[in-house]
Image 1 (cartoon, rainbow, N blue to C red):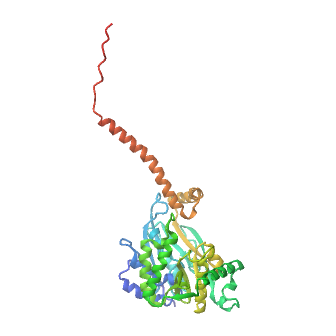
Image 2 (tube, rainbow, N blue to C red):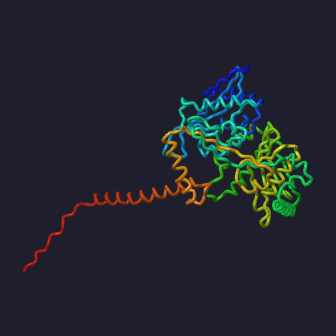
Image 3 (tube, rainbow, N blue to C red):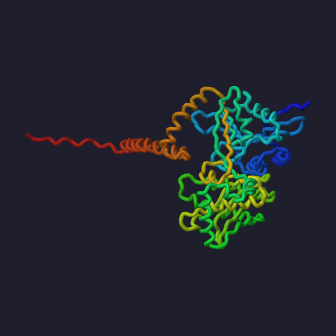
Length: 422
C-alpha cells in the first residue's frame, strides 16, 4: 500500500540542509536546469535582506518527494487593490525576477503526480493568507497539473512560445543543421560567414577554466551594454541583482559542467560571446554579447554566431539546443520545434478580483494601444502619470508661493488725497 503524502510550508532552517535535500531529490526528478540547486541555490543566496522565501515540502513515508520555493509579498501589478501574493521561484519584483526563470514547476520525483496535486492543494487552501498565487513560465508538463481550475479560485494563464533545435535530427540530416532551416535564413548565415571569413579564419573557443569563463562573461556584458546603450528601458541582464546573480552562478555551476561560455572570433577579432546552460544533454541559450560593427554592411554576426553555437553543441552530442522563451523572430527562424511555457495565476474570487479584471480587460489594453510600446507600457504609464502630477503640482505650488508673497509684503497706508482748492 502506498504511504500517504504529507505537505508542509515552512521557513528553511538551514541552506546547507536544504541544499543536500534538494540535490538528493534532483537526482530522482526529471527537471531541467532552472529547477536545479545550481540555479535556485544561487537565487536564494542572492535575494536581498527582507525577502522571506518558504519551502513547500511533500513527504511520503518520511522521504521527500516534492520541493518548491515560494516567496510571499504585496501584489504590485495594480496597487489600487492590494493584497498579498505568493510567487513560485520568483518575488513579484521586476528588478529581481528579470533573471527570468523558465521551465518552472515543482521539483518532484518523476511521475509522482499525486505529490504535485497535494502541494497545490495546500497552497490553495482557504487558511492561506494570500489573494494571488503566481506560477511563472511553467514547463509544459508542469502546466498540465498546475494549470487546472481550482474550486474557489479564478484561473488566468499567459502563454509564451519557447523555441528549440532537435540536435539529433540535425545530426541525421545530410545538410546538417542548416539543412533544417528555410532558404532565406541559410542565405543570410552563408553571407555572414563569407563576410566573417574575409577577416580571417573563424574560431569557436570554449572557456575551459573558471578564470577564462569570468573573462568571457565580462566581455559579453561589455558588448551587451554597448548594444543596449541609449534605450529607454535597460536590459534586465545588466541590472545589479542580475549581475551579482550570474557572477555567483558561474562560480558555483562552472565546475559541475553546467555553464558554457563560447567566444567566436575571425582572424583574431572577437565577433560574439554566448552564455549557455548545459543540463542533461540540453543546452539553453541564455544571453549573448555581439559586436555588431565587426562585419560590414547588413551582415548579421548574431545569426552566424548562433548557428555556430548550435553546430558546436550538435558536434558535442547534445540532444537539444533551447533558445528559451521569447517572440524574437530570429528564435523562430533558427529553431526546428516549438514548446509553450505557461504562466498560471490563481486569484481568490471576490470584489477585488472582479474590479481588477474589469480594469485589466478594459483600461489596460487602451493604455497599451495609446503607448504604442506594448512591451514597456508600464514605463510609459509611469512617465505620463509623472507629467500629469507635475502639471497639477506646479500651478498649485505657484499659487501657494504667490499667496505667501502677498502675506509677506509690508502693509502700507493709502496715499492721502490732495485737497483741491476751488
